[in-house]
Length: 191
Image (cartoon, rainbow, N blue to C red; front, side, top):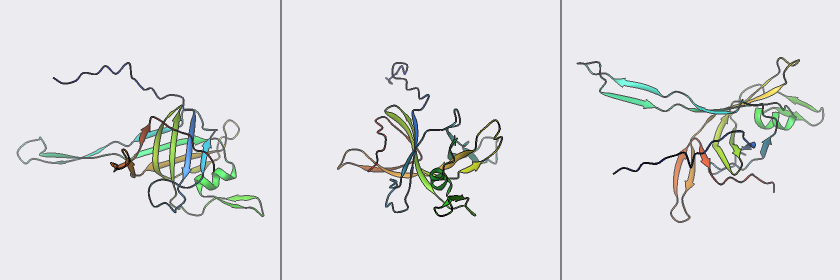
């Protein structure tokens, strides 16, 4: 007989994140674990944070003798990350949007062209977190409606498949995933 599980008692409801942490890839990684600086984003605008999967696409191999396909080929949609950060300080502009800071003139310059930049993003709920281990950032700065709104960084990107080791030492295996739920999350620390 098949197992029947009532999910109510163990339901996990992820609401009102405590923090959003972005850790940059430094470009020296030999694996998909970032070694760059981490930023705990304090001023994320309410209800702008999302991880959403694009719709799957389907291609049918059609049957000559009926309207029922022989086979449907399904391709998973990409996972998109988004959040709006109401903070345009130079450190975030440089880290998230690839701006250049000139210490001499105290000016921050927008990039002339897109350059691929990767980060790990953690959306933290107490001791749990939804983790996108590798995101190709596609962020931009928006300065609009400044009388009633605020200049912001539109943090955005597409989740990439990250190769992660799972399991106990000695029996580990490598899997590829665009995101995961960490049930025992620890905030990053300096050092």
